[in-house]
Amino acid sequence: MRESPQDKQQKFLEIYDSFSDEIFRFCLSKTRNRDESLDITQEAFVKTWDYMRSGKTIDMARPFLYRIARNIIIDHSRKKKALSLDSIFEKGAEAETVYDVEEPESIPTGRHLDQEALIDKLKQLPEHHYEILVLRYIQELTLSEIAKMYKESENTISVKIHRAIKLAQKLFPEQDQEIGRQLYE
Amino acid sequence: MNNKNPFETIQQWMQANQMTAQEKRKLKQSLVSYMTTHPVKSGLLSPYTFRYVTMALASLVLVLGASVGITHAAMSALPNQKLYPLKIWIEQVKSDNEKTPAAKIAFETTRIETRFHEASELAIKHELDATNSGIIESGIQNSQDTINNVANSISATDPELALAATNNLETTFSSNGKILSAIGQNTNQDLGTIILGAETTTQKLATEQVTFAQIVAMKPNVDTKSTAIATLATVEASLGSSATAPTPSTSTTNTTSTTVATTANNQTSSSVSVTTTASAAATPETTSAVVAAPDSTTANTVNTSSAVVAPTATTPNTTTAAQTLVTQAKLQMSAGSYSDAVVTLQKAQQILDEAGLTQSLENTYQVKVNPTDSTTSSDSTTATSSPSTIGASNSSPDSTATSDTSSAIVPTPATASASVSAATTLRAKLIK
Image (cartoon, rainbow over all chains, first blue to last red; front, side, top):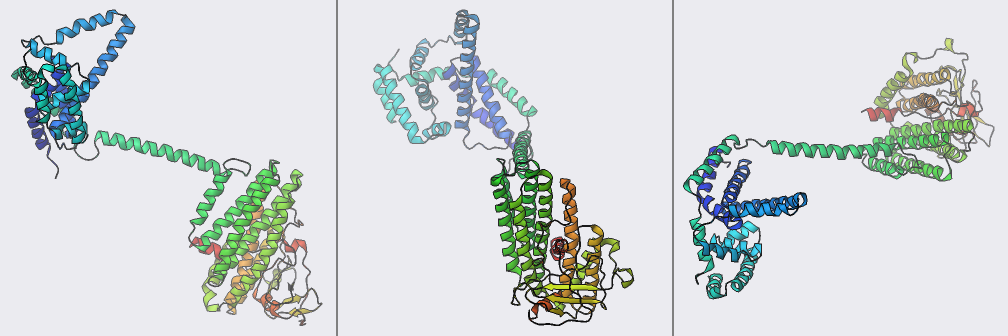
């Protein structure tokens, strides 16, 4: 049975209320830029609404939203790189300086410097490893949800998480056992 | 940095960096606004769907257009061009898809006409070499074999159609042979192979005509009554308003002679030729038939009236000959011999058809056929089978029977050239 437009609007707003915070946090974990994360979050929900109003249905809203947000982040990242390269070609070395000047302003200078230092350290991991660890242990998505998001099997996701944990243990030798515990939880 | 699990530490940082209530409310408001300006799409034909459908249709049109363009180009290809095999393939597919015998015969006849057209085109361009000629002859042979097979397969169930098909085929070969001969003379080219092939085929078809005509004539008159009436209407329509029965007063001679030339010594393979003097008009009182056996000097008079046709390529004579046959057919119908009438009327239609086709081809290729051209069927093999001639052919070659008014007419190339058949029944069936 087809949903009425009012039903769809209601469902969409429920999704927003349920997941907007964590999508924002996910974006923040990836971009570490509050304004950009807000923009990406808004864009992710706009795309979700476009998807719903075109008559398509969403089985699992959570992984769907994460997937959209992730894709938007990747797009933003590519645009940044392209902009940066264009600037280098157009303005020479000066462009890099401009970027460097803008970037620190967008990074929140919160109270939790040790926490940010941890994130900086974790971001030394390859991007895909960092992302999957954030999804699993910070955003606390289930294996099923991550698998749905990446459109892969749960077994594959488990293997990827295992590899990411192994790498993370090398980054945090003092928390080795604690991280290992996470893996087998 | 403490020894706490880094994930938990980061998690705490994340929790501390949530959206503020104001940010969340503002974001929600902007989303609601977006939802208002972008409501749920209704119906299946959304703008996106419409765009995709339009694109799909445009692609389809492009593909079809390209296909049609190539097909169209292929259909006008000549044997020395690269698209010619595609043309033959398309023709074969069409032929294979013809369901009824009548449709298949008609299509294969058209294919033969196309081959002759190709030969004419190449001859005019001086490009008809041995290779191209061989390709064309092969194509003609294939189509002819197909027609023969179909005609033989229906000879028992629908002999009228088989006879009409053979008549029509002979008309095609005869007319196109004459045209090719004329083109060869105009362009100083030797088109002997194809012309000879057409001539030989015309002769072979004449024999088949006799066979089918015999089968038609043996059918019960009750079964052929409606066919005879329909065929008469078709022939009279072809003749137009001039299709009136000749009267003795309008004819230049009151004697109509029928010559039946038997070429074999047995009844079944006898080849029968019926010719009529061009100026003749048939009347029951003066009609006679003579059966002439090559190896004998005897003549056999046939009691039933039969027209003798020797039309030339000129229209008046052709019309006269056809009118004569129509008159004869009417008499046969009056006597209840509808099967005989069908055969006679088909012959009349054939005469008209050949004249029309020849005239049309003359106009197309801007040539003039020599009336005495010998590219058409030979005298002894150009055959038809009016009821009387069938009766005559059934008589023994050695028998002798002469009526008082009989007169033998020796066929000449000119008279034989027009003794080809029409396709009245075939056309009637195709129209149906």
